[in-house]
Length: 146
Image 1: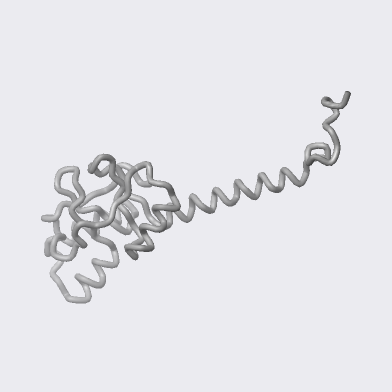
Image 2 (image 1 turned 135 degrees about the horizontal axis):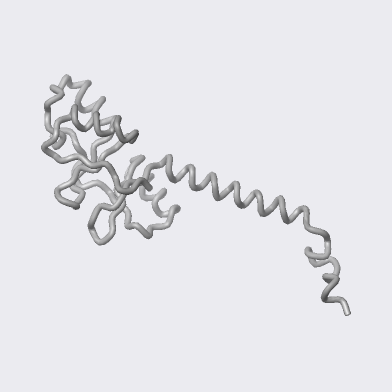
């Protein structure tokens, strides 16, 4: 999760939103009113909804944002977050705590996390393969023999 997230106001221009994305190195910005998420704008929105339609760079973000985006609570499990992304067909979700924006999670963030978990699991399996037979239950451990 990226916290605190870079945000954009609905009244800011598409040009400003693109600059915020570039400066933060992100592909989506939550559109906020105070600390409430009212929309989301992605780099794809800037291309497909704005540039392809030849909207002027000064056009307001609210013109192309997706309103009322799906969100996840801060304590939502990774698997549930992935399912929510798939159901909504999105790659970014605002993370909220009691309705207040606290971060953004991307598919890339989740993919990296799951890759790390698989690497950790592989290390455990590899270590288990190196343990002598006594710890696999085929013989009693030497300290317990007696």
